[in-house]
Length: 431
View 1 (tube, helix red, strand yellow):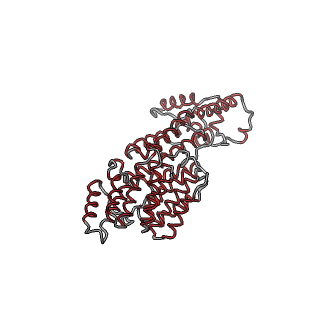
View 2 (tube, rainbow, N blue to C red):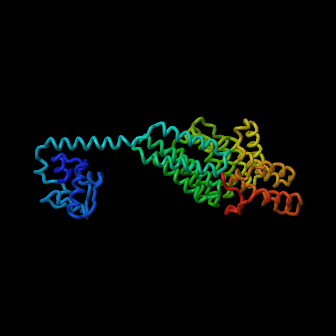
View 3 (cartoon, rainbow, N blue to C red):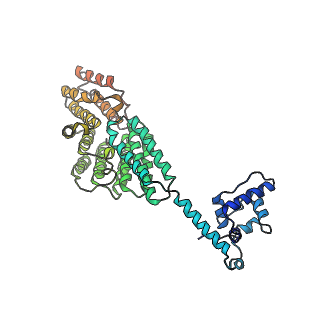
């Protein structure tokens, strides 16, 4: 407990409250011709409890020494002599101490939010994650930004640890969603910033699943930038966290497989893809499974992502099989639950596998659903897959074929394709 200063002792004996002292301070400053002057309650408390280590400066020094004649400001802001502190405690000091305690408790008790408002925020985050796949990225970004700002504002308005933990969780999940949407909008730098923000929020509350999702984003961004070694380092950090469910570990395995494919380590690609398919544990976490939506990683998405890794590793047969598996799983879902984006990405990977086999009729048919997707739904991952398909149509043996030229032109006419990346133009993402 902080030691009381001579200033604090004198005021306690006099029964002087902050409100009364603030009035005395302002009046004395005016009488000294020092202009309008005031002292905040926090500063007042610091002066009382030896909370300052240097002279308070102008005009506080002049005002205090006039209010307490016979004392210098240095004496006032230091503990009183032992003899003075051993004097009997008077009723005024007891009253002052009791009032201080009551005021502090009241001030902090007022910084509490209704739990209902936190329930609504968490519900809004779940709703946004749930509609992510069927909503234009720009709309998701605007709503996500609003929710993040709301969570940050609420964090400033409560001191309850339980409420702060819920708000850090909501803010972290929203930042994670914004990292995904920033990538879909083509801004990898901002995607990384949002992902790191989510990691920090997760660290604040020691939430492994939230951090793992964000590290996964950082890993596929590293893949995208042609740095698979960095991607694997992010994955290893995520795998060392506690509280991960089966969905989280499956997603990390998929992203790790993509990194090994970039490195040309075909054996590790096969091993990690098999791990992603074998993860059938019933363990769940409250991000990937509890919120779900964009945080979820269902088997159709696993198969679609693995198809891309196979193709990147040069395994056209594996890519075709995984893409067809993704499409079969999607076809077995109710129409309202199917992700048009996942379906389009799987269709493009199927087309790429067929192009590598020289089956251009089948490739043209497979590409049609993706090329018919509204442009506002064409996220970065789909565009990069289409760019890869177009490049594969220019490979030796196909470049002079009329059908290959026409299909490449059809892709170019339908969408604006991204420039080739450091990865050599092949898809580097997990989604």
